[in-house]
Image (cartoon, rainbow, N blue to C red; front, side, top):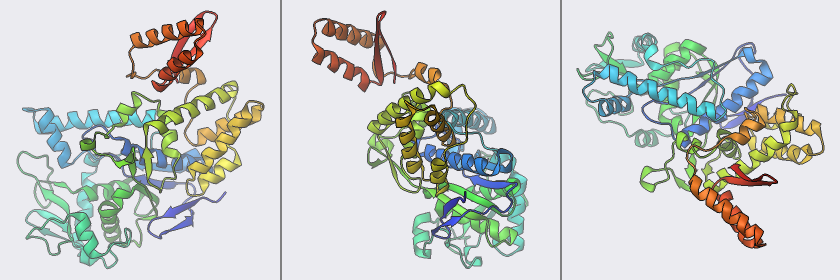
Amino acid sequence: MTIQLYNTAARAKQDFTPIDPANVRMYVCGPTVYDFAHIGNARPVIVFDVLYRLLRHTYGIDHVTYVRNITDVDDKINARAARDFPGMELNAAIRQVTEKTANQYVADVTELGCLPPSVTPRATEHLAEMILLNQRLIEKGHAYVAEGHVLFHVPSMPDYGKLSGRSIDDMIAGARVDVAPYKRDPMDFVLWKPSDEGMPGWDSPWGRGRPGWHIECSAMAWKHLGEVFDIHGGGIDLAFPHHENELAQSRCAHGTPVMANIWMHNGFLNVEGEKMSKSLGNFFTIRELLDQYRGENLRLQMLSSHYRQPTNWTEAGANEARTVMRGWYEAVAKVEDEAPVAPPGAVVAAVSDDLNSPEAIAELHRLRSAAGKSKDAARALRAGGLLLGFFGQTAEQYRSWMPAKLPITAEEIEALIAARAEARKSKNFAEADRVRDRLLDAGLTVEDSAAGTTWRAL
C-alpha cells in the first residue's frame, strides 16, 4: 500500500518513496532537557511514533532507523543547573539536571505508548561533528568568524526561507533577530559562540565555546542518518527558525539539494481552547496528566485530531477517551492471549493516508461495535489498535491501574459508596444515580455484587 505524507517543503501530499527501502531513515527533534516536558511536547512524540510504527509495518522492523535527539547543552539548562544546585561545579550540576530530566522524559513518553527510537543521540556527544560542519561552512564561504562567534551568512544561500515560505521581513520579525555589530547581515545566525569562565564550553579552532542550537541537530542527523535522509519531523513551531536553519547548514555543508526528502510538522496544541500558559493556569506537564489518566487515554485524545491540524486538550475529552479505551479493552480481552493478526486494511489505509488517525479511530469504533458478536472483529480491533500504539498491556492491567492523585480522598469514596448503598436500600434511585455520577466525575466506577460494592478507576 502506498504511503502518502504531507511535505511542508512542497506544500503538498506526496507518495513516499524511501531512498533505501532496506534502511528507511527518519529524524525527529527531541526535547531540551531542563524541565518536565509539557503536554504540548507529547503531541509530536505520539504523532511520529505512529509514523514509525507504520514504516516498520510496511518495510520491516529491522529496516527503519528512527533518530530522536536529546538537547543537553543549552542556556536554559545552564540557568536551571545554577538555580537548583548552587555552589556545585557547573558541569556537574548540568549533568544532574540533564540526566534526571532526560530519564523522566523517556519514562513519560514510554507511558504514552511510544516505542524507543533506534538511536537517541545527545548533543554533547557530537561536538566533533559540529566543529567539522562549522569548518566546512567557513571553507565554502557560507559562514564566518567574528569576535569568537561562528555565524552562518544567510545571503550565501539564495533560497533560504523556502521551507517555511517566509519573506525576509517576516523571518527577521519571527526570529527576534539579535542586533550585533559583528554580524554581516541581520539574518545571520550563530553556529558557535564563546563561553565565559562560568559557562560550559569546549575547545575549538575559534576558542573555548559552545554550539548554537541549530547546528546540534544538523550534526546528529548527519552522524546517524547521512547527508540526505527520508523524513524530518517536528512541531510546526520548529519550522522557523530551527528547521530552516538546520536545512541551510546541512545543505551548504554537504553540497546537497535537500537535507530530507520530506519535512513533516504537527500542529499546535491548546488547552481548554486557549494557548497553554502558566499565567493562565492551564499549563500541564505530561507527568501531571499521567498522574490522573492512563497514558493510552492521553494518546487516544491526541490522535483523535489530524496531526497537521491544531488540537485542543480538554478534561472532557480526556474523560471521553478514558471511556472509549475501557470499552476497547473489554472487547479485546477475549483474544489478548492469541498471537496478533495483521492489522485491518481499512486502518492501514487510513494511517497510510498522511497519518489520518481520526479515520483509523473511526474504523476501530466500528470494529468495537462488532466485537461483541465476532471474535474476528475483536482480533481486528486489537491488531488495528496495536498499529496505532494501543493495547500495550492486558485488560486486567488496564482495569487495575489507579491514578497517582485521585481528585477525591479514599474516605470520601467510602462515604459516597455507603450513601449510595443506603439510597438503593431506601429505593431512592435518583439519589443513588447522583452519587454514582459523582464517582464517575472523579474517574471512578462502582461494581455491585453479592459480596458488596467495589470501586476502581475507569
